[in-house]
Image 1: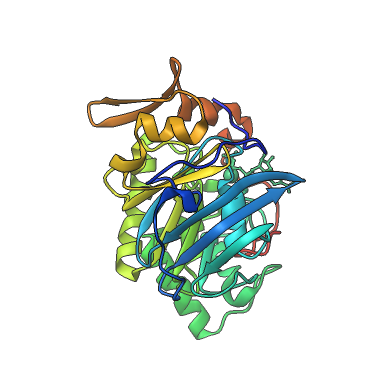
Image 2 (image 1 turned 90 degrees about the horizontal axis):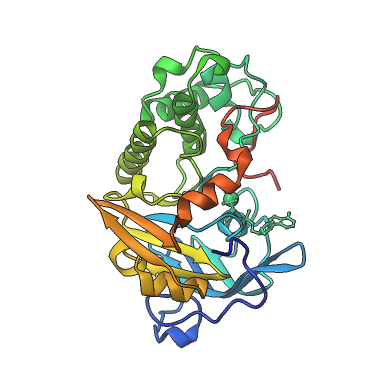
Length: 315
Ligand SMILES: Nc1ncnc2c1ncn2[C@@H]1O[C@H](COP(=O)(O)OP(=O)(O)OP(=O)(O)O)[C@@H](O)[C@H]1O
Ligand SMILES: [Mg+2]
């Protein structure tokens, strides 16, 4: 299994692959109804192509899981939607417009959880740190600001965390606060970059269920990246799988198949179903799990430093 998108990646094959006009799908012109719309988009980082000629749309109000091995381009794609990575080629629209930095209609939970004000901050202070774009230091909130923070804490069932120091919270509790932070401003599109990182299976399920409940209540579009499909099964509307520089999008039944993933990667992949769980196998290995393990830093879900990360200003 390659974990690196490359310049020599194969062309995207047919439906439901979302890679090129060769897929035979006729897409309507972007009319602004889609939450995100990509037309033959190529994204490059550090002089190398990460995603090549990718076309797909995220429909308004759907919950899409984004999967793919380390380096497949999940974070890069989110950052492109946030206006932090320009498309090298092609056209990208988010909420009907070209991506712009600091779009308040987009909520973002970054993968790197450089966090706020140190672990001494309370849960409420941490969530407050993003109200009205205050990235550095804590804003003095007016009544509306305080109400918004309370609303976000309530959305994630986090009122009881509000007065506790971050240092004392479990990984799962911190994820709830990070989600609350991303909900400030009531975004229409929520980009969650590996919110299951470092959580055990039980907490993974509860975060997925929570995001699903919030997504339905607020009718948001959610793009949720993860390294394993199983915690997301049963809650996803569709899955976006990145690999080999390409993308495949569709229902789990459409995308998570041996033929589709083998075409995506350009190498043989088997999909094994065991008692309601799905495993993506490369040779005799669980490809998703191996990709996860290669990345040692992600085992550490702790807060690292002293500043509130912005909603999406951490270019
Ligand atoms: N700022 C950068 N400069 C150079 N290369 C970069 C930069 N950011 C990302 N890349 C490269 O782009 C590729 C895609 O990275 P990206 O972080 O999008 O992958 P990912 O799918 O999110 O991976 P992971 O599962 O490890 O989070 C990788 O090869 C990475 O090394
Ligand atoms: Mg990433």
